[in-house]
Amino acid sequence: MFDSIASDKAHCWHPFTRQGEWCAPGHDPLMIVKAEGVWLFDADGKKYLDGNSSIWTNIHGHCRPEIAEAIAKQAAKLDHSSYLGLGHPLASELAEKLVSYFPKNTLERVFFSDNGSTAVEAALKMSLQSRMQTGKEKRTRFLAFDNAYHGDTLGAASLGGVNRFFSRFQSLGFETEFLSSMEDLISVDPSTVTAVVIEPLIQGVNEMRPWPKGMLAELREWTLEHGIHLILDEVMTGFGRTGTMFACQQENVIPDFLCLAKGLTGGTVPLAATLTTGEIYNAFLGRVENTFYYGHSYTANPIGCAAALASLKIFESDHTLELLAAKIRHLEKSLADLQAEFSVVVETRQCGLIAGIEFQKGLGEKITAMARDHGLITRNILDTVVFMPPLCVREDEIDFSFAALRSAIRFSKILS
Image (cartoon, rainbow, N blue to C red; front, top):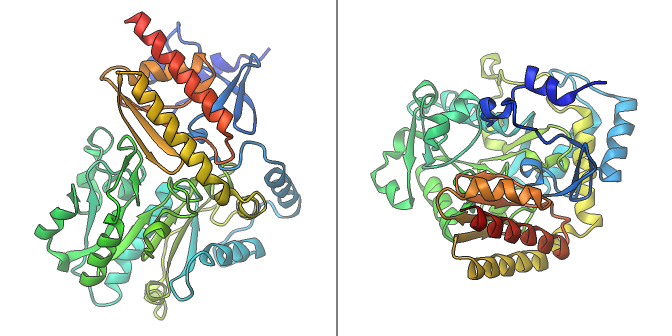
């Protein structure tokens, strides 16, 4: 009989995982074998609420029939075809749908890739190359923010502001100046900057910390004044997480580049997109040397495009965005009640259906592990426990999650 745990420990390498502890003889890894709605099921049949949407990807719940059927139908018709010098109808339809969320003559072009890192990487390279091809060769630097996370490919990593992840790689990538707030822009020389990159409304890996209201609009005004590209990393915040389809819509900001991934396919198969303007696209026309020589084997994969189109249709059929307001308010109250009840809760932070619960030092990882014993799967970032369920989560399922957290907090007190 196949022993999946033994084979995992012998051969697999998990991301962001302390492998020494994972492979230790006394550690019994949790193996997920089934999913339905907001629930995950392990090999023993125990179910867990997916409290971080399977790393912030799932939107409408797991194994949604409409998406599964779209994937199966497309796989039987056209599983894959190169997008290098060829096209296919679903990519055209998806590109048209994505740009339709923005006013005409703004974000007009869609470049497909595989994941959040590559969506950002494409934007960075497009920004730089467009400068080289429009007589602005001196604009070679990027601006990013402290504690930012924009992906793990080398270019994206050089814009990462989390030292424990990126400090050893920053000098190997793009030249980047880091900012802590808008006030730091006073000391920036804008003439050599090609673009500024930011996660709009809230930083994810920075323990779910929201930006001040109005800050995004202010930053956009500054970039327009100085001719600097604005790259919005909506890999996490896109597709309803903040309460609107895209976070930038809350401050009426249209960037030069919009990077999307994670929820694009509803959390089923890998697909990413970088949206940009006609002006930037036109800088790559004309000479052969102007071609954007960047891409991936599975760019615009037809199965991924089918899943994405099915997911976007569910937003309409389920009235997903319209139903979010009540859930967001319920989450807000749940967070407030938890903080009022337990002194170990230092702070709660929320943006839409995204939440971070910061505990006293040393408790984040313990409470995350204990919550699993009570049926809630999520992850902590240092001492902040993330709660970011699929958008289809019901209020009683939010209550279940917070009951699991309460049990975990009480149990952690007993142990301490």
